[in-house]
Amino acid sequence: MRICFVSRRYFPAISGMSVYAQNLLRELVGAGHDVTMISQYRGDAFGTRVYGGGPPPPVPGVRVIGLEQVGEQTDGDFERDIDTMVETIANEHARQPFDILHAQYGYPTGWAVLLASRRLGVPNVVSIQGGDGHWVGSCCETHRVAMCEVLAHANALLIGGRSFVAEVCDRLGSDPARFTIVPGAVDTPRFAQHGGSGLPAPHAGPQRLLYHGRVDRRKGVLDFIDALALMREQGTPFAATISGIGPDVDPAKARAAELGFGEPAIRFSGYADYDRVPDLYRQADIFVSPTYAEGFSNTILEAMAAGLAVVSTHSVGVSDCLRDEENGLLTEPGDVPALARSLTRVIEDEALRTRLARDGLEECRRVYSWTTVGRQIMDVYARIAPERPATEFSPNLPADPSCRFRAEPHLL
Image 1 (cartoon, rainbow, N blue to C red):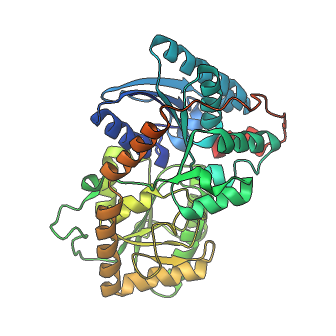
Image 2: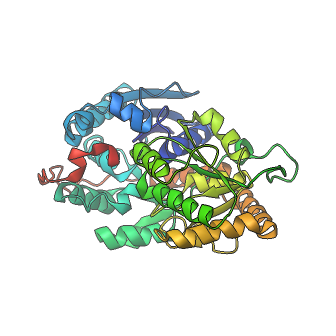
Image 3: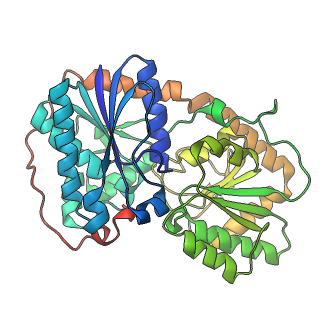
């Protein structure tokens, strides 16, 4: 089967989308499919600082085409970049026809794929990612209509879990029966500990806390720093690392400095090349994800695969893979005192910490392997391949210049 995969971001941008795309591409190539990836990327200095940027690197067995987000990074002109995506898909299809178009993210890539499918007569799959449900469509009428059209007319919609289905349907009025639940997945051998137990080796010194991912207040990173301040007041020993880049690196560092934190209490380790990420987990004992919402958290799965105890939140996307007191400890998003109490518990109670880590690791290996999840996605391709794409929708969107993401498109 000849597949065009259209990615919102790929490496060198560090994000869950990049990791997801890398693993899916590997599974598709391994199964014998002919794959082209068209990936957007930030090429400006600001975008590179916030996400990591630049053209996508070569991928073994995949034809890779990078499209700089020129419209977005100059004046929030998503439409200009969507037109470029559609034309690129059409040109590649003319060179050698595709059987399936697969977009990662409902907007802008999903809307671009829907338009390309309408034009070319090729069926499509759209993977709904975190921001699609959390904020895209609540920002302006232009993006609300685009998301509603994608949700109503894609040949197949993939989504990470039931809690996320509920959020998307509540916000955008979609039919829950339209979605196929395909959970996140992780390359479990890549993140495994080097020791035989699969758990972190005992070590001298305080328990090591790791936040890894986009440094963004919507991911709870500022709450984490505030919780650490409460723990310090109570005399709880810890060593914390905040790994990654994102829109709130400077506010996070400022909050830490305001609270009198320096190394080794809190270490900001910055951008982490994906090849180095497994070692970040191996240098930690507890993973902290105080997020306000996820589609499905790749970093939580990576932490589980590394045998770390996980402390997170009762939030959309997290509740599909973590259960409080069973394979993690969960608090309400934004409840800093509760987060501090959970972190203190897992630091002080070695038996609890070991049980959470061991149960999470076992479930991760059993449920979230890429072999299983990749096969589910390829089964969807096979099911829709004979179908025709929808054409009974308007390609024109209402103009609503008030969208907040036109002023700050990197937050989309």
